[in-house]
Length: 232
Image (cartoon, rainbow, N blue to C red):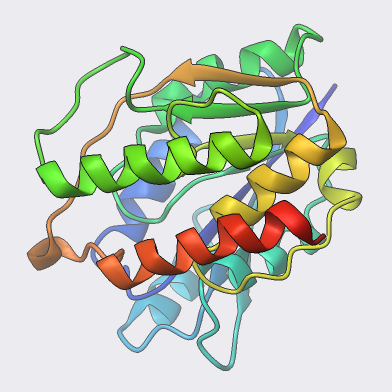
């Protein structure tokens, strides 16, 4: 039986981490599953909540960073610990629905894909109506990334990314923050992986609800697009 590793980077998500773990474990896929949660030195009660939840979810491992490093660094830690044949990224908030897992895994399980990205812009389930300029920024970043990689993605910045583990083992992740999305996309393109997109639902949060991505991360992403066009 194939094994799925679900890697969840966490930072200050004491109010949502229990609910997302419930949702992840409720999905029935017919695969062996491990959940790897990387607590990136949260300053709230996230760490304590995770330690308590370990007794409820025996397939879950919790790793703690002693210093906050960023999403990319948390994913790097999670990828190194993953033992599954397939690795899937799940955010710790409630913006993405684990019920989309079968769609995301389908192209890999069918032998057609090496990597699968979700997309919030090609149909799919419910989408909360959110910030216009965030949408424009996302499309600009995706378009610029596509120009540098010669891909035709619709949603490069999406959380949901799924990989055969051997693909990740051949890629060294350097970015510590949200530049991870750009870096991994450029390196997948360079490896000429079989990349698919599938539609996913999206329940976006506003800043009062804990949304963390800002315009500064957008500028950093533009820098990373140029950087990883010419460097590895």
